[in-house]
Image (tube, rainbow, N blue to C red; front, side, top):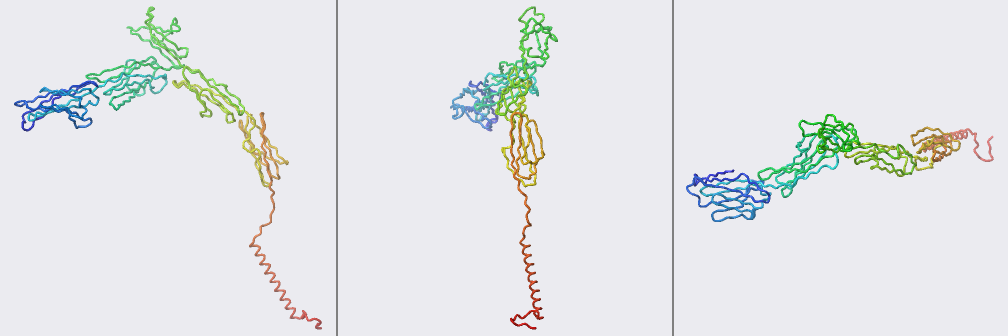
Length: 555
């Protein structure tokens, strides 16, 4: 109970009011709730003539309050325009005020305050928290549809459990064979997702991840829902799910039989297919199968040795051993194709579970599914094709196979031009290159016209390509033919070479040098003329040269 005291006003300092309320009141969603407020005046000579009673609610997430009711000796007023207008009723009898709330909602989860004011007799208030409960839906469990391998290093998803529309938030606990599972790194992981819708209801989804062991093949997993109700905590258990534990050939399996006898009794084991044949157990209550194979699959039974023919005292379990046979590829090992042909290869592996097949060539993925189609084969199609078969639900099971594809065909010369035209200066050498693809490997040969000689400077080849380079001294026009041939055909390539003559040319004329020669000639001519003039003048002075008068000659 919650009792509040508040000193009176200074006029009557000796008076006080006692208010007694409950700390909390609980109610189901949609039901009605009653909050009682008891009050009493002490240290007063007489009861006050006027007592004012007010009810308030606390605003969510705030320290402020809103009044929802006022009452005194003359009037009882429910405040308008609040969340409680039309939903509350207050009754008073002089010692108690009782607030009744109809159709309780989730938003009513809050604090309600009762305030008593006796004027000069004093005033006080009490506070009560209203708690609202909504029962969640029954838990829905869903196990994984695929099996789980015991070889998985990390915990695998086992099941999920979900509940909706609860308030306050419910909790989910996981159980294995009736024992609770707590989070344990590397073994048990519990992932929880909590959501709250616009109406305020909680939904919880829990996912269980568990490191599966071989002995979990018969384990039962359940989830338990715990939720609050007025005055108590209730639980609801889901249905159980078991997991499919994948066992593969070659592993060791132990089947254990347990009874409730005291002292414990030894058991005999048998298979349903061979009930009259007892299987030898190692410790009386454990049957060990190692290494287990597909033929060990079946229903196993165990009975106490002293059951005296009582067929009802027995235990049974289904054991399924999964397997994946080696991949079978057709065509086998290798296949020869002609260039341009098509081929369909298949890869199959018998398995107890669904498989996935992927084809690879040179480390690159080239196809999916158990069928591979090769169309319009080229020499690049040649190579080894590997198919890898896996079991997605049991990664430890995998196998592979391969086929070697060989594409054959006549020679195919590399380069688009089959006829090549070249020019080269006479006296120089020219290199002619010829490359061909084919299988069988083509041989390359050369034939030259005009009795030209040549020298092969490069010759190399691999399993389907050949290259030859010859060097020829150009002396005249000639043609060279490269012939590529194998058992499936012949192809040739022609080179036509035109020789360009090499001519001897005079020294080039220089204008500067020509001008110098002309100047020298002119100077020499002038010198000769000057000498000739001097000789003639000297002879004339000596009289050796006649005057030139006609008919007269000096004797």
